[in-house]
Length: 414
Ligand code: HEM
Image (cartoon, rainbow, N blue to C red):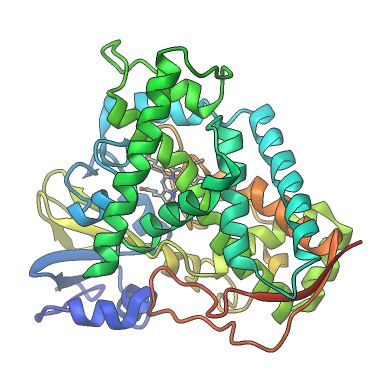
């Protein structure tokens, strides 16, 4: 047997729940392994990580996505029939739709909108005794997302829509009532977006060419047909839901400012440093833990035989903390990105590989724009106090978040 491969004999589902983000690193890093075969919910799963593991995971001649995502995740987080589940030409065609939204002009508009909403919220916060930044930034980003995508959103709707989009994100890994609530939130959200798409198609609502709502409503699939309203709604939610999810990175960024105050000072002075800071927030803090794909046909890699249709999981969090890729990986250090060359398979909080051919997140540039605008606003445009609170986070809770949600007091615009 190859020394770089090990196996669990007993089912490890309970360990996964207990260890969370550390589950794969605990198995691969500690023994310097390339592949670790585990058993989850009775299924034999190959765990891989690191730059070479990511390269393999994104090799579409060996891996496929169709059938890799469990139903409970599709029913809550991603929706059914969307880009996440497609392979080959059908995937490339759908992915092009998303990538076409990410023009330099659109990204500039997103950045400007983000700053404008921060300004609006900061005015409100000046009158409040305290602010829970995570809660506030979810609403703020829900408005940014709908505005950017061209979705009408009345002020009275903001709270409910934000709540539903958040439940879809947080409920996918939950069991029992929280999971059911998450499914209901998806059903409500899909219904809402479907009716808006119907209005657009019936010319009851004007849209701007290039906006997400316009492109989703009028996109023609690879056979030249319009998307079913259901699918168009799923894909439009695949734009606004993750924009709201950026609030988790915002809470972690505010935590980093509090824990390493020198970083906040440096972001005041340099746009280049804000980018480094944003990249380090995306690398260092836990977000998407791992991803799944299925083996297309039998092959052997590093002495391990992957079997057709076997599930494979790539470790995102562990690769972002892999000591072979990052010096002192468990240290928060934005300057590590000073001379970073930007590999396709090393910094992978939003997946790796190519945007067009593979499943790498098309929202990576928008995410970076929102983070730069937000961290810039937080350091340059407002003063605030961070009162005593528990802003620690647990790696066993997925998705992770600072416990207090990051409480700020005495917010004042400069
Ligand atoms: C895919 C994370 C923001 C849209 C993904 C994937 C991850 C991810 C891990 C899976 C990659 C894979 O399957 O290989 C994140 C995180 C975000 C974020 C952590 C920020 C908090 C965004 C934004 C958008 C977006 C802002 C849209 C504007 C998508 C879509 C896919 C995707 C459509 C599916 C791509 C495909 O299957 O080809 N994202 N994302 N994401 N993301 Fe994001």
